[in-house]
Length: 612
Image (cartoon, rainbow, N blue to C red; front, side):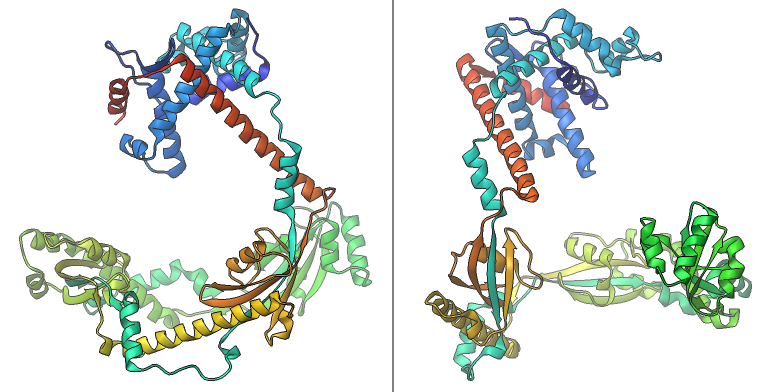
């Protein structure tokens, strides 16, 4: 049987066989091995596997922004996914060969001639471009045309297998009904204020038992005893000598920060013509429309026409009239770069000027720190030489301006030098075998550290955390009481009582959709409501809080509603795709089973070794 491909097939094939190969490079394999395996008599070539695998690795790298090595690809199962796809294609090739599905030479020729990837400067097919593209991809004309023919046959076979697959109506109906139904619910939160009567007081035995049972809450984390030397810009400020000329230059460079002209808060509404703007202004003056109304008439909001804080220079010819207003108002029509406009002035910002003398302290601080950073940079080479020469941190501190210190560092440390991410990263990664090295901080300072000891996590003695243990015990008692009370209320509601009669603040939600969000309430409350039968209640503990939730009624969706119809269409489409894919996979596996599969693991390993 010989069948011609259609236009849709043409472009699918061009994407797969031309543009999908671009930019990935080709590795050629020679020697006795030609394939990584076969299905029946249809082989999967070494180069085909290499090309497909490299394409997947490059695509993943582009998606993540990180290089993907062959080791990474194997760890993520990319190699197995590519092999599965290629063996599935080979199974279709084999079946197409067996039952005689093919694409005629004329169809292949038409597809090649119409492919944009092979067009020259004139817009028509260019044989030299055709040869160049194939050469770049390591393909001969015969190989490419054979692949094109095989792809066409596969698509025809695939269409025959899965064409016409539709979702059973009962299945789409049940899925749509499930997704679109809503619930009327009520919920109430129990808090400490709802406790009736005093809770029990703990004995020392209770607290010691709690301390032991909840040891993880009272365990000191791994502590790393670290010595360090640190040189910060602030430490060198006493050595900094500031130049008056440099300070004045810094002031002038930032003059826009220290000297700001008078400004106005302005909105500008542009019109197509002077007449349109005049008519709009007349309606505004007559009280028939607000400025917001005028903006809305032009399809704009006030945010769209807000110019923010503007100076005279920014308003051009309209500046005089706008700045003449002594209180908020609207003027115009006035010219603008975009045409006649009405200007709404909403606020007056007076001119401000901070003199050089007033700014001196700020300028001196910033200039001093900047100079100190440069001094640290100049001295860093000498400090690195000292450390490289074997000087201890104590010796470096004695011979330089670096300040010695120590810290009991944990993952939660944030005080002092541990406030710097670079220090925390170095402290967490340090080993006893490491030699101290100079590391830069984000404020221009530098440090070096040494790991002196690592103390394993250990349970803090009860006596040292007795107060925390008591607070934890009481919190657990409160939580248990609230949970028990919530269970009691849920049981009474199940027996006919009303949640609103339990002395709790009750919130009613008219229609909670599946996956709906309730502000200020843990998601588990809504999830529990969706699993609870109508007329029933449930106690919910989530995020350290306790709730009772009651489902009053389940509302079926209206199948004629446009939103429900859109959901149904999406459900039918997704289910049809899933069914078609399952059917196609079963067919491919059946062909593989009937024809037999041969897998050459040595050839696969050789390809993957080349792609390391």
